[in-house]
Length: 267
Image (cartoon, rainbow, N blue to C red; front, side, top):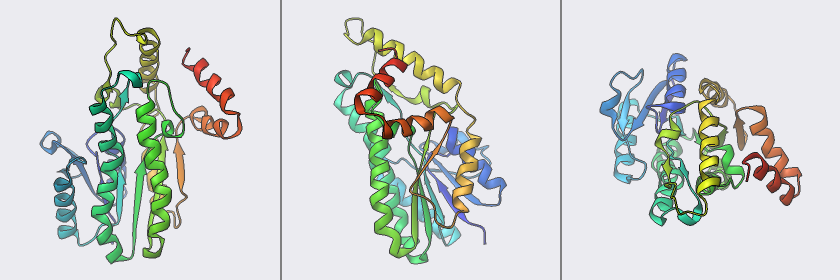
């Protein structure tokens, strides 16, 4: 039988690439968006879901299970970027980012688990970020929200093993998507003490996304994980140096690694 896959944030970027690739490989795929009417030409159905609204999560999961009778794979892909000096980011924006990047995925997981326990089978893939392995300047809130999801996955995996429900993280590096356009950017204030370093870092971040890898690389990684009997806890997908930065953080003294990051960001 064909496996049924739910991808949050499946209307563009990485989610769209993964959905199209899985569809072409014989999976039954459902994507989600807050505004599904904008994606009527999608290669797979796009259902309404806002990870910040529990009622939309529950409704969409029920629609899929009622129609297909099962749900084999959840890919928690919906996420939001955020940049700025932490001192200058409004508290409401910090909370909103965690609602999308951390609490949202947890609520989607909670919605699919009763069905996966009933099946005694299921796979949950959380899309995090290589940025979640380190505190990056002017991306500290994003790093924190993605890092929190990385850690909670480690705990969740152990809690779910007895139900034969598997969970893993995929941490992508920079990919050529529209994520930069959808980020919350704390404004560059003329009187801000952070104006020049934040502005320079913002330009560097946007350049990294514009020259990023093809999202098809993520799609192929997802398919490989779905076909893996016992997925690892963590996967990293991206350019060599981005993945190697995690290794360096593990082996270098903290202050040396900090100096390396500051040199990279010209701080």
